Amino acid sequence: MIHDVMPGTEEQLSKGSTAGYIGFDPTADSLHIGNLVQIMTLVHFQRCGHKPYALVGGATGMVGDPSGKSSERNLLSEDVLQNNLSAVKKQLEKFLDFTGNNKAEMVNNYDWFKELRFLDFIRDVGKHITVNYMMAKDSVQKRLETGLSFTEFSYQLVQGYDFYWLYANKDCKLQMGGSDQWGNIVTGTELIRRKAGGEAFALTTPLITKADGSKFGKSEGGNIWLDPIRTSPYKFYQYWLNSSDEDAENFIKIFTTRTEDEIASVIADHRTAPHERKLQKELARDITVRVHSESDLAMAEKASRILFGNSVTEDLEGLDESTLLSVFEGVPQAQVSRSAWEAGPSVTDLLSEITNGTIFPSKGEARRMIQAGGVSINKMKLSDPNQKSEFNLLQNKYLLAQKGKKNYYLINVE
Image 1 (cartoon, helix red, strand yellow):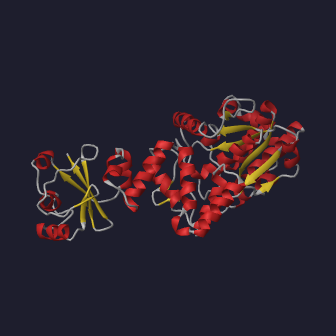
Image 2 (cartoon, helix red, strand yellow; image 1 turned 45 degrees about the vertical axis):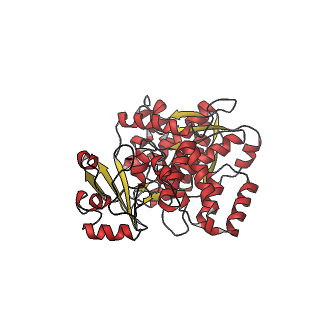
Image 3 (cartoon, helix red, strand yellow; image 1 turned 30 degrees about the vertical axis):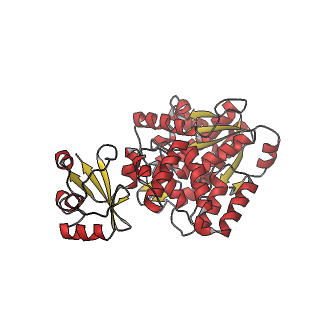
């Protein structure tokens, strides 16, 4: 998990409890799994007896960090930022201990920037860092060709001042972050050296990449969020379950709190029978429970059995509505009136005429496939084309029809 470490950092950490911080960007009302690397860095930091600060950038969220960006992002209003801040804090509380001797603390840089006047800032902070020093940073160099606003150019000064403020007010001597933050972090250590005559340190983690070259933390629908409303626990679980063997071996070392021996044992077991995907299952279970809950994991595993395993009707009936809709998002849907359903049609009529040909274009085709054993409703295989449609509605309004192995249809009884 280590990419770069400033000389002297290890000696500082070996002296005893050290205060260190990582900044989180509040541009959304949820963190995503790309943030999990930094969350885990703070988790390990705290477990080793140090004091973690999570800085949520209420002020810097109004500016925008150019690091790793190809264009300037939209700036957020104060109201939106405040909502995002409270949501992010709730998520961090699942991982960090905010009680005890080395309790985690959350700070918002808006608290010290809101009273700071521009002239005071450029006089007391800007004079310590030269333009040459700022221009040499990779994050600046990469954007010079496409255009870099003064707002973004000043970002490293603003982040540097965060580090200085935490050093001066919280005795914070270490800043951690992703490797793309190195330039911003060392600007902070330089400001502390020049303005306070103090010594501070930097540690960065590698940016996570996937073995196939695709971007970590993204799916077809975009980011994998920690908020269950943005990314359902089922989809969250599936993301990790679908990791390649190579990625899973890497991820379990970064995203779990298991010991080195435990991880080596799981990897060894997996390699003896990779088709069982034990490594992916252990990884997905561990992270889903810590981000969501045991009950969300149980629901996700149940949903996975429905799609990919030997599930039974009870599994399907046990799904809550949000998980059911998440699992079958994108499958064709057919609307059936409540009166047509209550009239007790045959399964052949239901799957053809009453669903307007969505599932079968004709009664004859429906009848033939039912007789061949290729159709089920709510995971119950049909055999008699004249059988009445007397099934329990899922959540009192849905039926799941399946044609062949992979073709699912959701019938919505309204």
